[in-house]
Length: 286
Length: 151
Image (cartoon, rainbow over all chains, first blue to last red; front, side, top):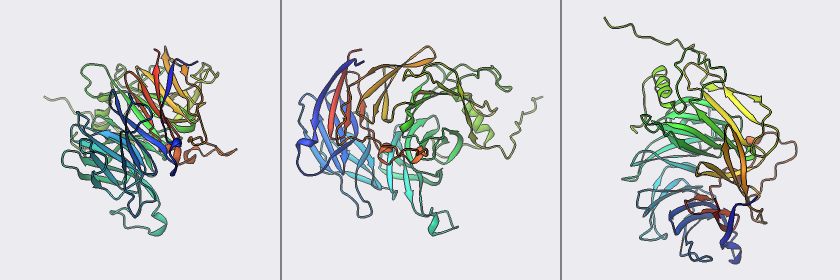
């Protein structure tokens, strides 16, 4: 069944030359979208004018990278004039759309690839991706331990500086998806599990899904009094479709192991329990 | 006199990893197949109770988003699928026509390849879906599309 009308807006096959694939899209205004493409393109389209790209830009490929494909676009501010872009390159790019797509500022992180971004608070963004190399705080084995692993990076969006990064305990595989949670982030990817972190350094819970997770989307609790608490988390699981995780859902037998029964959406209280059990809250002041 | 502080006992060998086990309930999932993966995580004392439901595990999802409490996903054959929760079940309420072409990100899983974690690199690098109030924009390979939902 189909409940809607699909309209073509633009097709890169009409252009000769490079093979362009659309990789990420962000709606800026009701009439404007910005999207990124392989191998390294940024485009702005006015949806009132189909078959038209109103602005184009090219992401410069750094010498260390094989490509410069944008993978994720987020707004830096509420008015939508500034956007942040990450992808298969070691920096987060900041575009001022009033100037155009020809120039941008960048925050270099040194990661191999940065796949996903999550805005946390007013002036901070958490970026997840992969890092290839020996962690700076690791003095053990050498060559065979230079395989890619997950990295989480915290960037101050006000002054565009890299605050901290976690390349050691974030994940043992590429991080493909991050999403905000109170006091930290959800992170997932090739490890097959969804990790809850306080800040970006302290893992407080792993939920083993046994499958690759490519995207995380959170649905906030509507309950008053539970500020920023997460009620549901949706996971894109690639070949296994979409999964829905409901936090704070009582078990089917009603036995909470001594816990006080709590309504759905009461993750916040349990998170404080987690923090209480596992020590001080470190990391970001979110 | 203040009450003594309760200190929970956590065995030091306890793993941070919450294992999940699959329970077949016999109900239908969004694909209409008679297989519903409802997974109850172990209710550990220190963790919030958790329930995992696979909305539809018959499709390969490149990316997805939320639209008016529905889950809308872009699949590897270029279709947009929409699922809606009805009671405790998810059901597919709409699906666009297959518009896949030569340049799509279609995933071909090798026969007998069980290691889904390493399915493909492109699968994990696609966020070509923007969901607005009035329209849904998505990219299928080289084509940028717009879907105007009826409901």
